[in-house]
Structures are given as structure tokens and as C-alpha cells.
Amino acid sequence: MRLAIQGIGVSGGFGCGVAALRTALQTGSVEPQQACVERGDKVDNFPLYRAEIAGLQDFFAKRALRRIDHFSKMTLLGACLALQDADLLEADRSRTGVVIATGYGALKTTFDFLDSYLDFGYSCSSPTHFSNSVHNAAAAHVSMQLKATAPSLTVTQFEMSVPSALLTAQQWLAEGRVDQVLFGCVDEHCEVLRYSRKQFFADGESGPLQPFNFAQQSAVPGEGAAFFVLTRADEKAAYACIDSVTLGNHLACPVKLAQDDLLIAGADGHKECGRWYAQALKGREASAYAPLYGSFPAAAGFDLAVAALSLSDRTLYVSPGQDGEKTALTDESLSCLKFGPGGDYGLIRLSV
Image (cartoon, rainbow, N blue to C red; front, side, top):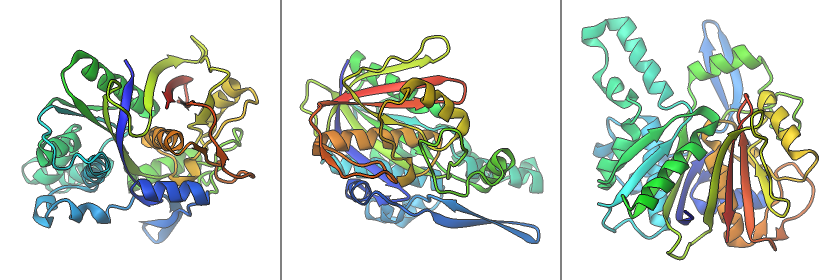
């Protein structure tokens, strides 16, 4: 069943909202922030695309956000921006489902809870950190704060989280269980993740991010939230329609790319994933926009937002770091391709 995208809400290293994403696409450049982690007498400095959440106070009172962690705040902001974009902030949401895709979940809060357990024991570990570390906590915050009382679900499948969760949203709408789905893609960065990535990649993430240099590790970490208001395609789409979602493994069943479709590759500088793009593309032209928001599993949701925005604007934006100018989009379809390190892939096809 086809899905219609009625609203988009994004928050990333480029700023907040569709206008900020469009500006980033037009300029073709977003500089990551400089982050640091102290380790004893040493300071580890590294680039990071950190998400902006300053606009959340426009939707909720500070008291309502007092016990909510950064991961859930990103989630709430993305959901509110998507509803605002679809002009549904004041609408009844009793039949609005919530589906969230995340590669890692609330990492920082989870490790903060473990620290409190190790420091103070079982009886004195932090109940606030514990409640926010529960995997469906962010979806629960969205459901409660926005009174979206239909089913909610959080899906985690690392790089395949976004297409996998999108299949669930598609199924809910096909079954008539919901009238709309707030579909979100969220990941956050934390110090433990930085430590792990440094152990695996050493200084391979010092930037700049080079999506099409498949032989080199150049991923720059990021975080953010991309949300979509999805309905059945019998309603006119505000942006574009999602025609199909395909999950597979390139070793067992090689991905089949339509020759006529323009392609957005989810290549984000990870060498282990890059080799699969090299095999699948075989020299074929593609676009990649990871240098605008960074490398993290849920970034496939930002690729989806770029594709929908491009179809709506009828404009193919130049990939960051590539020569050329934006061109009028004559084709009526775009595909987003995301590979995992083991050859798993997700292919999402959109059309006007």
C-alpha cells in the first residue's frame, strides 16, 4: 500500500524544521560542531553534528519537560514540528499511531542509569534515568504529551531500523488500525558511543565526511530526529508518496535498482558499509547528503526527508562537496538506498 507524506519535522546539525533543511540543501554545507570528552588528564576533541532542540519550549511548558531526557526531547520536537507542518497540532489524535525507528535508543540515559546503579546500588539507583532508559519511553512521551492514543512501537534494527519500522507503519494503515502515523527516526550521541567508535575507527572520523570515498573510513558522528505524518495515499500528499519499502540482503538477493529512478545513497563514510554501495551502484550516479547531518543509524530518515522535499520542490539538490548546480527534477520518482555492514539493505521508493 502506498503512503502519503503530509508533514515533515526535522532537527539535526543543520537546525530545526523543513526550512532549515532546505537551506542546508541549497548551500550544500553544514559544519559540524567541535565536541570534547575528558578522559583523566586528556581531552578527546572530535567533530559532531549535534541536534538543536531549543524550539521545544514553543510547544510545551518547561514543567512538562523537567524529567524528560535529551533523546525524548529530540523525539518530541520532531513530532511537534511534523504535526505543525501538516497543520494537525490542534487536531484529534485518538487514531494517530506512533512508530519510532532508532538504531541505539536512549544511550546516554541508559548509561547514566547504569552509573547510578554502580555508584549507589540497587536501592538508590536513579528512577528517572531508569524510566527514560526503557526502550519505548520516547514513544510513550509522544503518545502522552500529544494525546496520540492509538498503538505505539519502537523498532531497533541498527542501519535497517528506518525501513523496518516503515513497514510497520504501512501495515497499521493498511489494516485500518490508525488513520495517521507519526513516524519518527531518532538517534543520539553520547560519550560511551564516542569511546566505542574511537576504539573501532581510531582517528578515522576526524572529517570531512566523504560519502563516495568507499575505501576510506570518514564517517563523522551525528544525532537528530526526523518525523513524518503518514496517511493512506487515497489522500493527496503534501510532499510525496512512498510507493514501496524493500528489505533484503545483497549476498542472498542482490538489490534491484530501477534504471529510471534517481537514487539517494545512505552512504555516510563507513568503510564496511561503503563496499556494498560500490557493488550495488557499479559506477551509477547517485546523491548523498550525510555531510549535512552526520553518520548514525537513523540518518536514513533524513535521506527520506530529503527525497520527499526534493520531489515536492521538483529540484535535485547537489550532493555536498560535489561540483555542479541544482537542477529541475524531471523524473517523478526517487529511491533511498541504505546498506548495513553485513550487506543488509533497505530500499524505499518515492514518487510524486
